[in-house]
Image (cartoon, rainbow, N blue to C red; front, side):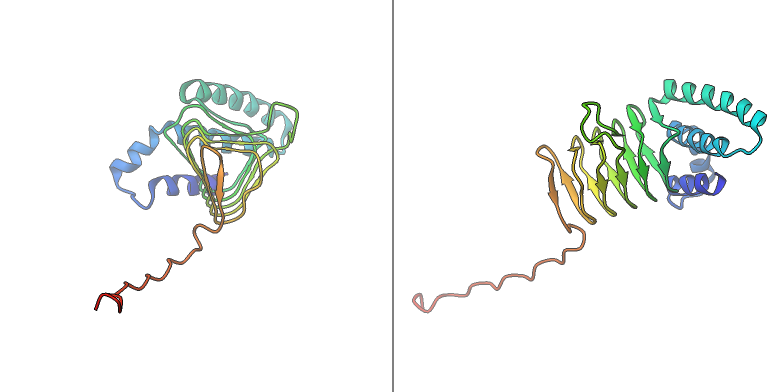
Length: 194
């Protein structure tokens, strides 16, 4: 629990460990929501039954308070790797499997579909960015190094190193691996002009 939450805080701080930045981290509601999620996962693994029950009550109350204040709902059934960052809290719903170093922005939803089709949880790889108000729905697999643009709705698998662009949810494959095209030769004066 502590090592994964430390990775979350370190990624939030982005190397800036100044006293002012550390103080600001204590008041960041998204970090509180992540800490409560990590605590809940730790409590679920607690081997002592009576202690686990007491801690589950405390976790449930803290979870509901955090949800009411921050608008962030991270299901205790989720599996999330270290380095999670949530920017601009509010309206964030997460219930799925997420790899390392994921960034989620305000209003993003990573959940199962409610229409009865493809009802599994989304699976996100490492280094995924989910833009503002983006929706990742159902049993889809999002590869590593994927950027999901703001307001995109993703209901199909996305390969590694891709960008998902709204409004038609266009997937640009291999976006981050492309090398720049060589410059085109400049056309000189034609022989007819000379």
